[in-house]
Every structure is written in C-alpha cells, then in structure tokens.
Length: 413
Image (cartoon, rainbow, N blue to C red):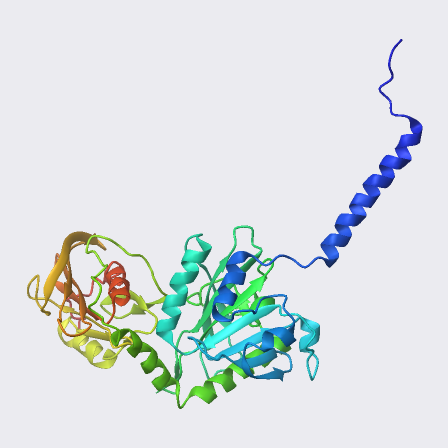
C-alpha cells in the first residue's frame, strides 16, 4: 500500500494558527520591547555618569547631576559634578520635549556632555577609537542657526558594526567672535539605534565634511532651541573658559612629565590621535590638532611677497608650538638629546626626522624635520610638545606637510 505524503486535513488549521501566533508574537515583541543599548554606548555613558543610561527614567538619571532643570524643546539640563565635562543634557522623545514642564517618567533617548577642555577631547577621541575598533570615525557637519558663533561645527562619529548605536564628538571650527577669543566648546553625544543624523544630534546635520562648501542643512524649531541653549552655555563660560582650559592643560605638567620614556619613534607614524584641522598658508599646508592657531599670519605673508620665504608659528592650548621656516642645516633650530632619528619621504621630499628631549627639568619634547628641496632653501619643521601624546600628534602632523611650488619664489611685480 502506498503511503500518502499529504498531511491530514484537520492539521492544516492548527499549523496556520501556530504560524499566525508566531507572527503576532514577534510583531508585538518588536513593537513593545526596548532596543538593546550596545555595550560600547552604555560603557561610554556609564564611564562619565555611573548609573545613567539610555532607557533610564529622567527621574533616576537626573540624580547623578546637580542643578538639573527642564528646558522646553531640549530636555533636562544639569551640571556635571566632576570629570572633564561641565554640562549634561538628557534628551527625551520628541513629544516630551514639546511639553512646557517636562516629564520625569519619560525615558532618556540621548545623552550629551559638554566641555571647554580641548585637551580632554583628545583623550576622549582616543578612547572612542579603541572602544569601537572600526577604524577612523565617520565625519559630518552641523550648520549653526546663529552667526554669533561658528557657522559650522564639525562632527566625528562612531557607530557599531550593525549600526545599532553610536557616539559623536562635535566641536567648534573657529572659536572667535568679531576677532575676539571665545570659549572653544565641544560635546560628546551618545544614542541607541540606527544613526539618523539630525534627530539624534539635535542639530542641522549633513553627512559631509565642513570643508565642503555645500555642507548646509536647514534647522527646525527643536534644533533652534538647542542652538539657543548652546549660545547661553558659551555666554556663561565667556569669563571663565580660559582659566578652565589652562587648569586642564596644566594637570599633565604637574605629574612628573619625565617620569616615563618617550613613546614617539621617528620612523613610525602614530596616526591621528585627536581631531585635526588643515592649516593652509601661501607656502605650506599642514594638518594640526584643532587647538593650534597660527600666531603670525600677517607678518609671514608680508615676507612671502618680499622674499619668497616665511616663518610660520603655531601654538596650541597647552603651549605646544610648531614653527615651519627656512633651514640652514640638518639639526638647526633646536637643542636636545636625540632619542630616535629616521629618513623619510614626505610629499615627494627627502626628510630627516629627529625625536628628542630638549629639557631635563620640564616637558619639552621635540619633533624636528629637515626637508631637502630641489629649489630654494631647505625647510625646517620644529615642534616643541608639552606631553608625550602631543609629541606623537605633531610627529603625525609632520607627515601631512605639503610645501607649495611658491616656496623660495617671489611673485612677479
């Protein structure tokens, strides 16, 4: 007798019911179950605010901070009690942000920490690069709604491999207002779920570098409220931001700067250890940590027109310095005991690199490069760093130097 491979008719409704129940179960779970917060995101928030996390109630999360208040269209804003950050923002969902008095039962959707310590940002950048382990960060740009402060702010962000959460660093590109120094503000913001840009960063965001002139996004009411809070934050720090940065910069110098050996090696590129910005002049370009400012721009450009050469001086917030100028010999322009040296090819030029310690009593770590030029005077890259990490940052900067064809040539009258 042949055995039928057909299932009994009475089992068909049972199977359909089971499938239907399974579908309903997964739909319900998907709808009501809160998405898991990636460990990278949870650990980053927990490191700076123990006990606080995405999904926490506002009531529980706010107890970790001081002077917490409700800001409509933003969320709960408070003061960080200790650490590199000054202010914290706990963002609820969009509907709650519209309420005039908030809701302590609402859940934290994003957490943002704000600071004015630029050196602290370098350390956080390095930590995030290690935590996410997925190469260089992605980059984007925020368009500010105010012309009083930087029209654009740069964004560097990391997401998990499955894009289920991430952390971004947001920083001012130009902390000057009407040619007067202003506090350099940066922040770290963390979220859970796929990256959507503006809704999670609470700003007018585009996925392009700010160096791209087309990087412009339109703000909405919510982002404008956050920007107004940003202005108030900067205003409150205007009189005290400089001492805050100086105090932060002084900490490493007070803790035995020569107690550990230099880690920089002349032949090795340590890579980008902190956010950088391209510095462009008539004769040379170089990518430097974002706190470095050119201090003699007007004078140097006058010399370019007069002689075809110039000396360019940059200074960082921690008093680290860089000079690029004509050189007379391989080891001219500095003194100190050489630790390592190497010959490299940089931008098509043969370059002799020295790593040295220029002091036995303080933090003065040298990165020196001597560029051989086919035409005109050789070029000297002379950097004095105030910490070992800053020395590595400037060693990487040396490899980004581009010397322009006008070096040594005066423009025709």
